[in-house]
Length: 307
Image (cartoon, rainbow, N blue to C red; front, top):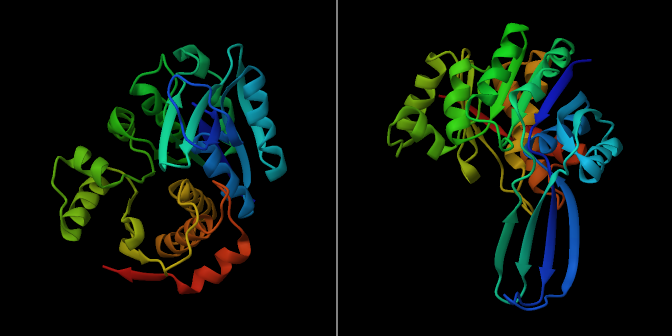
């Protein structure tokens, strides 16, 4: 079976604190707290594994927190190839104020990496069919971080999906990854165009595709998504679902594309699968998680239009 390698450079423990009413400068008692290993790459790993792929997760994990992050992958049967750092992996704290319905976040900076820390990455790539890199990078790395990693994967002749934003995306895209999934703001940044209509969005997607990116996927939120590739331009229309948690749905979509690319499915079929996985993930409380039964129910309901 195909192997998918996921890359999470900036993994974290996401701590969610629910408080009755958040008081600055006071002692706040937490009504309930949940700890979840976070990082976009981990939210790609889990759905890909649930969907039946062999998944190896890599990145950097430090200290006890890093061990906790790596252990969380075991129940999913994900093989961990994280590099262990001395310093602790970061935590991100999200405080939910029940009374005022306000969310306050504290994002730790995490450890600092140097270019040298990456040397081992080359040894993992040959075993993979598709490599998916997602999210932000730790301190000490600049916009060239993904550019270098994408180049390593391309040189090994493997497919690579890059899902990030800002400078990391702008510079990473220069290495011509197989696929990118920019949102509307990112497309505007990349093509310096307004993209106010669907036509303009498609034009912008085509521009990025013509610059050497095999597949460009643009999310339209509740309106589904667009995919521009060698085989044409497609729009996926997703049925109305009872969404409980849309966090990580974009990552679930990346998992679907990684699966499709690794199995050599057509762009149309891959988009259908990815859309069904993403919608199924929105139906469940847990981030980066879906149930195959939900996905199989949704598959025939997804409409793919050729534009």
